Length: 295
Image 1 (cartoon, helix red, strand yellow):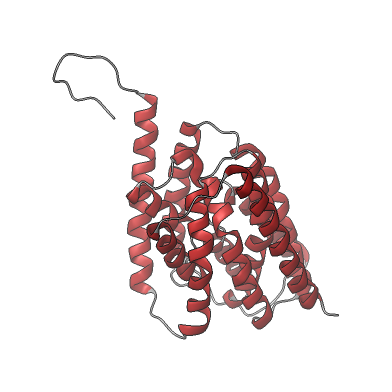
Image 2 (cartoon, one colour):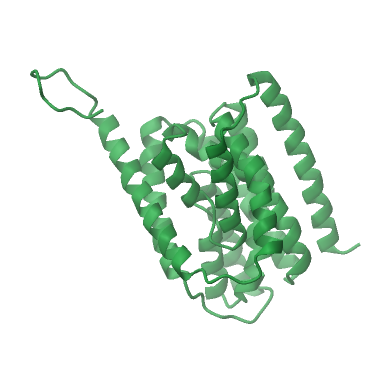
């Protein structure tokens, strides 16, 4: 049996275990029916995710715009809700895009290790720390979207020597940052392109990394109840059809204008998140009648 076949089987097992684990936790908390808006956010963000744009920054922007999720619950909701759609993406792309097996497996393992470390820290952070951290992360994501409009065109499908270990270290850090809400896709593709890999080979690596690490990180967010159940279910239920639509229905799409739109909404979310952190630092005080105070 090939390494790719084993990975696909492990992904299927991971999806089953995660679904059962989350199902028991949903039963414990009580089922919360997602709203049409939650399902729509899941469909749109995972549609874009499958095209390689990423879902975390866009989802955060939508959460902030429609005020569907508390700021301190956003990192957990992103990981918990997008986990199953991302596994669907990985099952599709690992099976159809060629990449050197050792590079694929090693980078996935590094991202998993990073996410386990990061989730244990972020799940315990107070609200303002998360607001500041995600605001900075969103600004970084917007910059990465711009840089990654035209990634360098490498040719190799795997890495060796010192470049291999640089990629391992880089994906470990990106796995940890995933738990804060900065997506892995854009920085991973940039990193691998700069190291000389074909950008197409980044798809199974970045999707496989997220597919394995997100259930690991999500288990800790779920354990601490550090997420929105209603919004998370909306992402999961609405996201899988979005993945299938992007992977099998859309054959070619000019993403230039879509990417610029993403940059705009992500910058908006970053400003709003940092504004919320500033307001939390200076809470409402009793002042003279008629005075305008932050809310």
